[in-house]
Length: 273
Image (cartoon, rainbow, N blue to C red; front, side, top):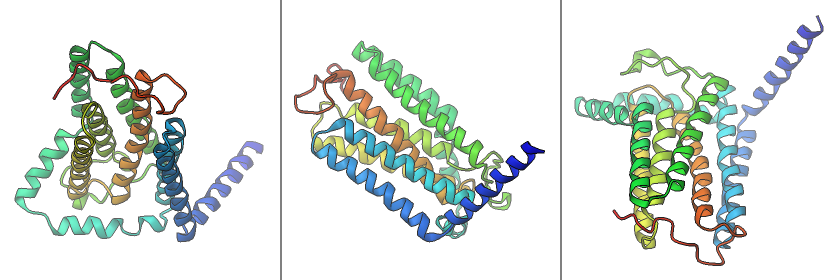
């Protein structure tokens, strides 16, 4: 009897919390906090405080994912555009885009992402004779994927209606595993490949990685298997993991006090594109 009463009380409390969180004011406030944390991280990065920048940046992205998760779980204000965006993609389908989307989403699947990550890790070890960068790459993608799987189980969001799905998927929808995996892998590859490159080249590589991740996100919505908030959360989750992965890469060659006051030893001194 006591256990049953406790469970009922917890359920009632959770329901009340989710109901309150569904309001626009609460969700906007949550996003403002998340943006503020990320902005603080960027400011600390400019001041060459790598430790502080990593902590605030990762917390900001993680908090944004939490805000979206609560909004999705409570059918909150932030989910308001999901249906309209899904319908827009359905209305703009064509035979050519159908084939292209299926090809892109297949290439960016969890198994394909894992296989590509392993291949890249092997190449990194072969070219650099170092295991550290390869292990960081694999750990970053694996951490993002595991976190994504756990969130799927916790939030337990349903997929879009099967009537709009071009590829039947019935497992939980939030967040998008395709976006989480491909974005974390592509961004880490861009960071590693950009080592020793001019700033313009590094920005170009990051831009390409982001663009490819956006393409994957669009194909998931185009195929009718994810909502807008699903792919958004996947991108934020990948950003959180990559923030930590980038810091780990930095620490491999700069085991100092967390600042960039002294030039770090070049990470990839034997790799070239």
